[in-house]
Image (tube, rainbow, N blue to C red; front, side, top):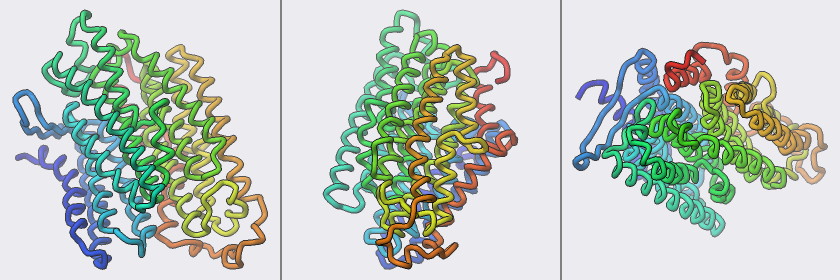
Length: 504
């Protein structure tokens, strides 16, 4: 086996093997469990860096195992997959640090971190899948590994939220499997390929291909929280804060959005999908989801539920970018896959800090929080401003490219959708910031809740991750033109997808 085959397997093993060991560790072995978690996260980051450098240099990394005649479990590392892999590896490290601090002294930590590692393994498998069969295997592994995390607390409310999550995702998985089997029957394979594989079928298959597209998009659209398949996401907010961060920024909803990108670009091919009139309906679904999620967020007093409906809206920016036929929209959607991740994980880290330190779970309880936790509130403010698309933030870059993409695709209505969403973003985030910074501290708060204690406003492992991701939100906006940013990588992917149409 060559190094080009070993490296993708090593990326998977770097979280899988430590996770299996962690399952077997007694609860009292805190030091070893923490060491394994951090070693795995750092090792994965190093392996991903090697993979990223190789892919950037044009190297090909792939490995295949025959399961049945004509059916292979296949992995590959390409430019599109590396965008998702790199984001996941970086954010996993900071989510691990945060989870170690958040769960200090909590029960069942070995079980939690074991499934946590399996979840990240599944995410990496999704990103490196070379065909729909492999994608489906890891996609369902992600469902099974995240369910125990959602119900980790074991309360009645947690079990209810987890049951709803499992029901939605299993139904989605069934639709996805049906589409995969149907397509495999027609083509004899389901390989991902530049410009897609569906166009190999003649025009007489157009009707079947449209139904298959619907099944595939519905299957991954559940995890991407497309309306009306989004109902599980607000209910899953009963999970601990590190799990919420994982669901929204690193794994589940991103896996769904990434699946839509793969299906459009490498199963159907963007030009063939356009010729079948599939992209415009997808854009409409994305637009409805963007507006509905933003609208529902306005009426949520529970802080995590407000952030959950914000995710429903924001993830569909990625889908809208895919559906805007043209390279500029593609760049906007792909770069938002990264930018939404760093902004949303910041917000969930901060929400967890407010809950753990001050017992704040609702927007109406945020009065004066900025005085007690200035650094956490500053990080939250940067994440919120980024979601609104404020200048010098990651969100501004994403929205600018998406608006330019809508103009280039002659879909001016999409610009109005984006502007309306930005106004709604401001309407549900600015009241939180106003309460936190400008409202007086509640008289009922004890003195220790009022005192400003700088870096000691909460545990260091809870404070450092959101400060880093908030800084990344600003860096992604201010350094967007750098050759080492997500925007530069998204441009590379768009050039390859729209080869022959000129540089974007």
